[in-house]
Length: 44
Length: 303
Image 1 (tube, rainbow over the protein chains, first blue to last red):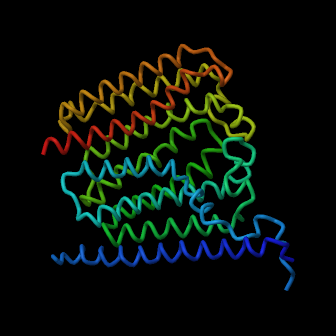
Image 2: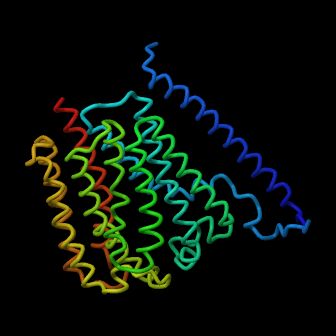
């Protein structure tokens, strides 16, 4: 049983965690791209 | 399907800030700094993004150690005032989440280090994580007052990893940096454990003041400070650094030894009267930051 108010806390925490995860994944994608560029030695 | 009891806070999904707290960000800052110093002191620097990734991996590895440490010690943390408000003993997170987070973070940091820099650095990062978790946390810490003497090796790895990430090989200077942190760890932690002795005693952790008493601990602090000071100054006479570093290291180490003499002379048993011990603990953190900053400055000015 979810108590009054807990449903809201659960949704908020899930929402916040999803946002943080999305930001970290986006940063990881950018980092991997830059690492690939650096490792292959491509000059801009 | 049985209904979940949501009144138990540990069943609620943990806040993302609690995952961040699991990584012990304050400890991580010192680890990141020494790792960065090791990387910047190396004779050849990697491209900026690879250097950044190496430091990021050291930070994530340290975070994994913190999370796995808190996962394993949740029961002990609940007994100490200093640690009772951490996410696990406070019931804000379930242990399984902390375990998964720690293992995942550790594996990710090692793989990324290997892919971005070299596999020797990745192997050393893996060794340091396993050493901290298995040798220090699981094996030594609950069993022997020598826990932080041997366990201190785990915290001494970062400058070595930073250097190897940059160069791909070992050298005498990073090994000396390893030795400095290794010898710095006992005086640093024993100074702390003198004024939080009751916490460690309540938790049943055999820290030196609990097992051997105040006087013996103060003597050990002084005895470890001497080889630490010698190791700190050593890069200069060995020709691995310049006079700027040598002079600063000598002054910084002299102050460290002087503060440890004050601790040696102290007879306080009440934490409120342990000014000398608290000064030494605070100075030890400053000492490591200052020493490594000067080392890097000396290397860069020499170029």
